Image (tube, rainbow, N blue to C red; front, side, top):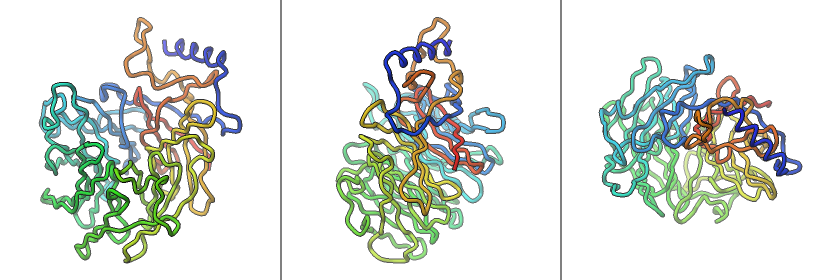
Length: 425
């Protein structure tokens, strides 16, 4: 049935003359894998993707009103299975807005091989109150034993948007979120991994915060208006740093110092001395030197646009691979033609960013898109045919992960899909 549907779309694309803009890089072919549909209500997921020490890829899914699942993908068998059933782990059968709706955290790995993630609220429907949501739970999953430790809710009614471990000090740093608009409450906190007790450092009021820990053990969290909070466990001191880009304060166009905050991707280099940054709607890559021991300013530099000449970009997925390569999944709107989902990279020593092209699925029969009667299944509208013979994801790349074997994995929406990409270096 799916093959008939895509055959129809290819004919439409050919007749309409759709396609990539002239001079665009060639299609980047993916092997697509449908994430188990019972783990999501709307074909949805977020930043949550990571390779474990066991070489499995772990993805967080969103099942609004019901549950949040951590899904494991085994590259050897090409099979997926549920690793963590979050509502079962917390011992709750709550539904609606009171349920844990999604894993939105960027998964992080401890030196022990344990995976750190957290649960988050969904969206209230008519008749539901935000106070119905009890709060999100930090969780630590051990693939070696299959066991999950659940920690208490850090802030009532707030979800968990970020958690980053420092197992050498037996702590994890986390950020909460209340989903208020235009300015959120986002508490920068320390979790004692042994006792489960919390220490609240600061309400940073910055949406979708990612926390990184540098080579000296210092933890960083963005602050509303462009400052960066840095906590040093050696001195038990919290600082609020200013930032510069190429020696100057961030411009309004950079979105790094937005007065109401703006989603900013952060990830750290393998040696933990460089912080890489991309604002979601900003067409630019930045880096910060974390090796400086002191000072009141974090010095950053620009590495140019993600995609030169793009009319608009949307980057919700960024990671730094094991070899230090920065990988970005970017929805690119060109001056002419449709929005396409590109994979972009940057390596130290390179000038600017490298566009590896827009994603096209090499196995269009990877899932069913229609029911037995030929009707499109709900939440299966996330693919289209921009030109004859091409099946491409339509919306945004939500997460990205560079595995140790060189495979780059990304996730897209509706249905929630994991794409495996073999990219020539």
